[in-house]
Image 1: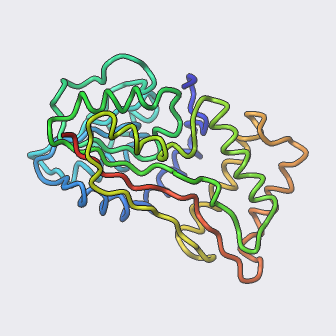
Image 2: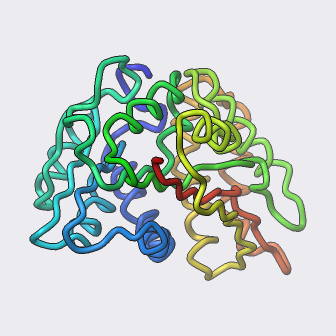
Length: 265
C-alpha cells in the first residue's frame, strides 16, 4: 500500500468511518457471536482504523480478554488508544511477521482490509501463524462491489462505483477480494465454518441508504484528487448523489459483502 490510504485519513473520513461502523455494528456483533468470540478471548483487529470496532470487541471480551488493534496510520492509532484499546503500528502489506507471538491469538477480525492490500494472501498466511490451533478468522469483505447501483438506474451512480473500484485496483487492491479469500483459507489449513452473503436493498431514510449515499458525497473529492473522476464530471456526479433520495420510488442496492468465519485446523 502507499504511504496514505486510498480513502485518506482526514477528519471527514474519520467521521464517515464512525457513521459506517454504526450502520454495520449489529452485523459485526452477529459475526463475532458466530465465531464464538466472547469473554476471555484474545482478539487481533486487522486494520482497525480509528478503533470503533476494536472498542466494541474490547467490551465483548471483557476484563479477562485482550484486544490488539493494528493499523499503519498514526492518526488512527492515536484514536484507537484514546478508546482504551491497545494499538500497535503495523503495515499489513509488509512481508514481516505480525507484531504478536505465533500461536497466541484466539480470533482475528478484519472488515474491508484485504480489499486494499497488494499482498493479501501473504497477510492471510501471517494470520494463520498468529492464530492458535482452533483459532478463528472472521471477516467482512466484498465479493461483488458492482452490485452497488440505484433502481431506477442512475448512470452517475454507476460511474462513481466504477471509479471507486478503479482507484482501489490502481493501488494494487481488489474490491472483490472475498472470492480469493475462500480458496486461500482452504489452502492455508482453515475449515470454512460459514460464508454468508450480505446485500441490502435500501430506501431513503434507511441506515444503509445513508451509508452508501454519504460515501457517494464524501468520496467524490478523493476520487477527483486521485484522478479517477475528472473535474468536468464531478459536478454531475455530485448532483446525482445530492438529489438521489428525491428520485421517485428509488432504492439503492448495496455492495455485496461476504461474511467469512473460518477455523484454523
